[in-house]
Amino acid sequence: MQEKPSSSEKIFNLDNQANKLGMGGKLSPDNDESSYKKRMQQRKDIQAERLQIRKTKKGLLIVFTGNGKGKTTASLGMALRTIGHGYKVAIIQFIKGGWTTGEEKALKNFPSNLSWHSLGEGFTWETQDRIRDEKLVQEAWQLAKKYIQNESYKLIILDEINIATKLGYLAPGEIITFLKSLKNRKNHIVLTGRGASDSIINYADLVTEMRLIKHPFKEQGIKAQKCVEF
Image (cartoon, rainbow, N blue to C red):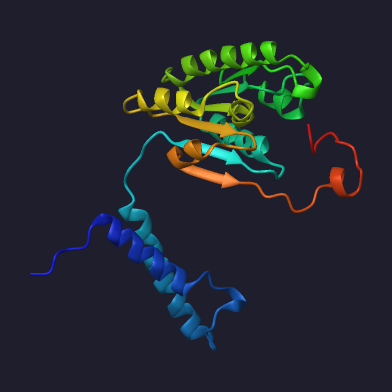
């Protein structure tokens, strides 16, 4: 008797079928609308199966890293989404903190849903004090742990924590060990900043790398501007 495919095998097979059928549109290989409609109906049915078979929920560790722009911006989009659903968000900035941004002003219009802490004092070339920088990172990490253990917070954003680990102010292993010690964690944690360690990337559930293709500061000598950079 042939064994039934496991759940992971079903997911793999359905994903492959979806990829083969494609997204549709004018690049679809179908020559007439009837065959195109049939293909898209198959795609719709498979998509329904893909959604139905995925039933597990868990607190995720999400990483936004890479040399491209948009890591903090992506995490703050998640913050807005979370607040929109009526949940609480904690944002702890490990490096940034020397200036006020538009997103901070906007999100602070939701005081009952947001806790925002800018504990960094700026980039290393601005602070020029490794001892104080490390002290502030450790203080930020201790605060972060309290929020992570607080089940009333649905999303915790640790902004630029990847840079803090890259600079040697906080060990990636310490982050992983702490998260592993939490059983049945329901909230989502976002780590931002370039240079995420391999161990963090391997442990995370979702990792996105922002890749730099063009930047006006670099190619055109254009200064940072409101609404784009801060």
